[in-house]
Length: 142
Image (cartoon, rainbow, N blue to C red; front, side, top):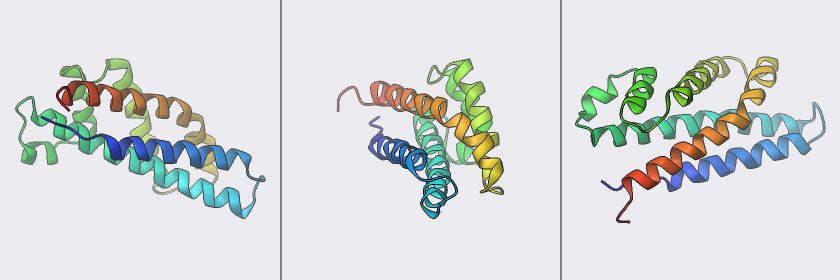
């Protein structure tokens, strides 16, 4: 199976750029708020794109699309570890990212700044690792 990870790579790059621009903007400025909102949306998009790619990858292990669509995200992550797409330590961090993402959907203000910004450096590293694993494992002939 060929699994195109280009969109995920682009989303990660956009998230990194938004984070850099956020850090460079004046504290409590409109620009900082714009970049904060971009970071939140980027964070959500990188997660959702990662989960979609994991579901596609898991089909290669015999899971049906219907079954995977009904499977909770945390179980998708566990299955990814079972099949060597992620380590147990990575899955545990992704659980934290997922819980935080569910919180950011309701809190775009101070809670975001305190929790999400702290997670982003490791999240970006973990998403790059996932993209690399998926690219290597499912694009050997590409």
